[in-house]
Image (tube, rainbow, N blue to C red; front, side, top):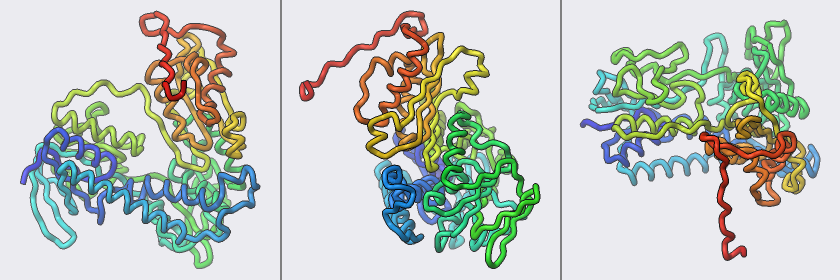
Length: 484
């Protein structure tokens, strides 16, 4: 049978492309080789790690320690069983929702391995060996990634794990070494630290999270060290050894770190090895990433698209979804407006980090005059109520146009709060928006008002200007009768 759209992979980008294609009246087949729909995001990546984080924060009492002290715990003896129970419930729900979504939109799905036979045909091979061929007008490669596993690292799922295997721990480690301080590494390192597991974080570079504002990163590192984590920056790994009683990480500078468990989280690789890309003339780099047109997500073969983690940075579930939608719309000739100016990044570490727009380093490099407004969560009444002692919001404004250039948050609720900054940036809002508008009280979102006032006090009075140079005056909405 032939399909208008063949989607290879059922993660965020594949799911969104499939549903968008179906809503355009096209026939769609989604093929995934996993046991259940959902892809890496649902089963080993985004959803499991965030569920694990939420469970740890709840059971450990982390959020209440500002009131009750570092020794406070909701549950004294937390086991892997406690963590896995909630994880399985969440994953079952995610799969059920996805299956229902496909059913509502008449999206067909199959469990099989895919291999290209040409620019309009693939073969499908099931686990039982059943073979079939399917034709397609357009295809989307959305196969995601897997943990990078160098041959000289002795992964054994006893002492040395990759990030997928960490979900299969049979008990909480007494000590943990995490190699790689990227997003996945810092998330797992800080989650286990919140369980009071002594953690050592090793990163061969001299800096971490280079796409995040430096002031936010500096505060993040300070908070990690303040709670007892050991951070080894600029420390290349020479050798990793698995011993009966411990794992050993020998560094290039001669030091050796011993711990019960090692998590190797240094990079990921695209799942493209068995797709037969060479048959259609599509190349992947050494890490299995496919090059695409950044606007249409077409590969070098016009009717074959790629989206999600398999095309590389930013490798976010949120951006992957949008990439899948854009690819589907382009494939069927549906015009789309230009993409928004900015999109947010979220790092679900403990504490959370989220950022949108330009960092201070980027603004400084541009040579534009700017001003900063800062609000610390402990300055808000909601922060006092929650017992929040750390975390802050940082806003960057253009002195010339008064427009918001960037918003950066570290602390409780950062990934939720960032969307206020995202909306203001993409709508061309200025510092005056924060000064002149009312925020719910008490909320952490009130930090936007505090940070806006902080910058406004140094910038002075002024009128925001639109692109035509005229002042912008936003209408004041009427007060609802229920409130009045």
